[in-house]
Amino acid sequence: MLQRIRKPLIIALLLVVVAGGIFYAIKNASDSSRDQREAKVENKKSKDEEEKAKSNTKKDDKEKESKKTSYDITLGFAGDVNFADDHETTRHYQAKGASKMADVLSQDYVDAMNGMSLMWINNEFTYSKRGTPLPGKAYTFRSDPSHVAWLQELGIDIVGLANNHVYDYGKDAMLDTFDTLDQAGIPYVGAGRNLTEASQPIYLKTNGFTIAYVAASCAEKLKMTPQATDTEPGILRCYDNSIFIEKIKEAKANADYVIALPHWGTEYSTTLTSVQKNGAHAYIDAGADCVIGAHPHILQGMEYYNGKPIVYSLGNFWFNEKTLDTMVAVIEIRGDYEGKTPNLSNGQVTLKLLPGVQSGYETRMATDTGEKNRIFKALEDISVNVQIDADGIVRNKE
Image (cartoon, rainbow, N blue to C red; front, side, top):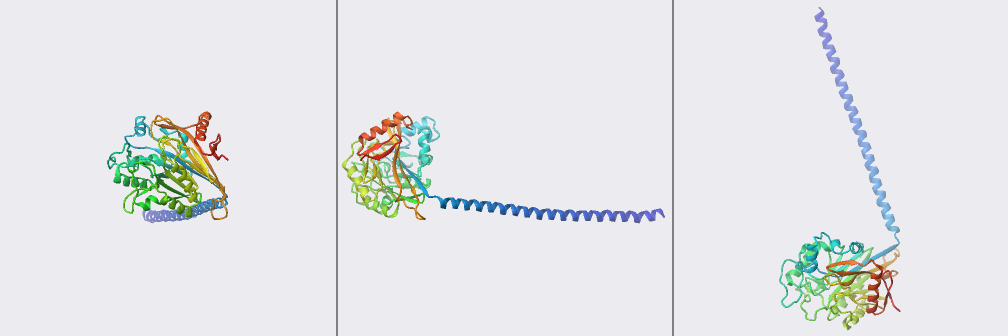
């Protein structure tokens, strides 16, 4: 009889245990579901707060931008550089075991150039692995396309190609140069696949303003670098200034500030030619706001004409072994925004010099006061009508 009673009792106890387990499982599932719902709510709340914070940040940024009332533009210019594979500068870079441009240029210059609103440099060679040197040409320069990275290290925003070395290895090498710069995202001025490209002004934006660069060359007595045609690549020449002046006028109609960039003058001479002096005045009369020249490989003098600055030659920047004074020229434009439309009409334009010395295949910014003053005095002595103060500010000498 005891066995008959025990059996149902065991079964009942088992049923209670099973029922308890089911209840516990359901409760846990419910609690878990509630926790998940609460977590989702918290996550959504957190995301909403994050988005709100982002929105507020963007709003604050827009408000700050809308409250910006002044502008400070720096337009930098450096002279001749040469990255050719078999040239002294590149051989020195490699022999030194350099890994960056700051190993052959002072860090001061590298930092200053990268800090410009826009930075231009004269690209005095061609980027290619193709072509052969032009017959009869004494000096020809061709760089491995990979060296375009050196321009990027220097913060270069645009290069000048209106010079007498961009065609040193012929048509194919010139086309490779365009492709290399295009792929690097660096605009070029003064040369192109046809005359339309070679002569067109290049427009770059900074601080809401449009800056125009127009370039041409009249550097060769023996004209070996061809002018572009409707169907052939080349440079824009300015032995006859008609197209160059036409393009300066076009740029004036479409930009806030226009820079004329002629490649001209006599190599290693500080004497200005009549072509330079007459040309610079004509470019300003046509609408250029400043004239920045290159080609002589040394610094030449400066002039103010109708209140506009002229730098006749930037000289070498990193080009050969010679010990030569050099500089980065800086056009500084400061002023206040007027309403919603940017306007440079009230801007104060200043020409400032960052002097230095190229020597032994390296270029260093002058930091010693005596060295800077020596360079400034030398420039004043060969200039038309300028004074240069201790900070490198170039003013019109009345």
